Length: 295
Image 1 (cartoon, rainbow, N blue to C red):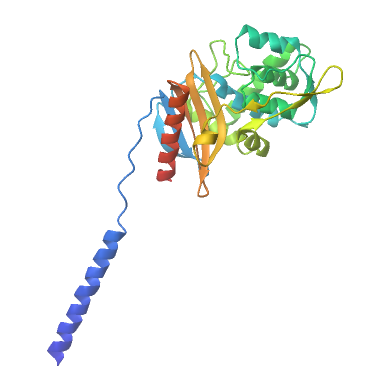
Image 2 (image 1 turned 60 degrees about the vertical axis):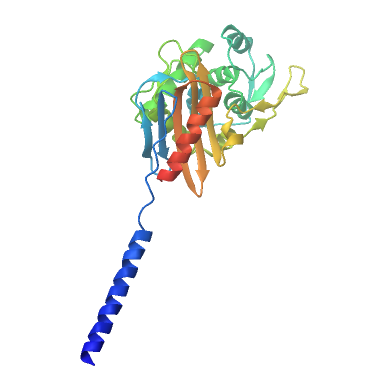
């Protein structure tokens, strides 16, 4: 009897051991996610909740940023003391002349129209209006002349970068049409965007696909502008996309600062110097999908 009990106990012990082993195998981690390859010369992705790095490619190499610069333009405006989004700005001929002279992207603002700060922010971020950027820099800079106000505004952009602890970023323009010293890195731009996304107005604007502004003409009548379409194609092609901003230019090539939320997790990142609009979106999708798999 005693021997039979011992044999039975041993059998139970072996069975339990087998079950434990099977359970251990079932809990083994899945195969590591393959690090994606992107065409963009620089890339960076982080977990937005804790700033943990998830992907890097030349993440600290300084590059021209194109209109992704406008993220900082909007951030500085939204951080202004006593900000009134309904205050009106009269569109000056200088803004129109500027976009024509630079063959720049524009919101097609009409000289003499009164446009609210809120509308200018949509015109800045959706169609990437350099005329809207100029109007905001003129409104929110300090000084007695337009030139000094614009210079002051760009100074505020650089101060904001310093306050974020960024050492590889410098602005010499309010819109990305630089004068040889307008640059950032994938890591720095991602940090700027992450900071900007803390502002609810900024978040609302950058996830908007289309916006129609009603401005006030010189005669006091209402003008319904043609709808501004967001240049960020990810909003329509990648589930969970919540922003942020496109950029392009002869030097910058094709850039995209992107963010998406899935299952309560948010990834945010940047690709700089990709080869086309389609390719920057493809690069961004790869990085977001990879980022979600890594969190």
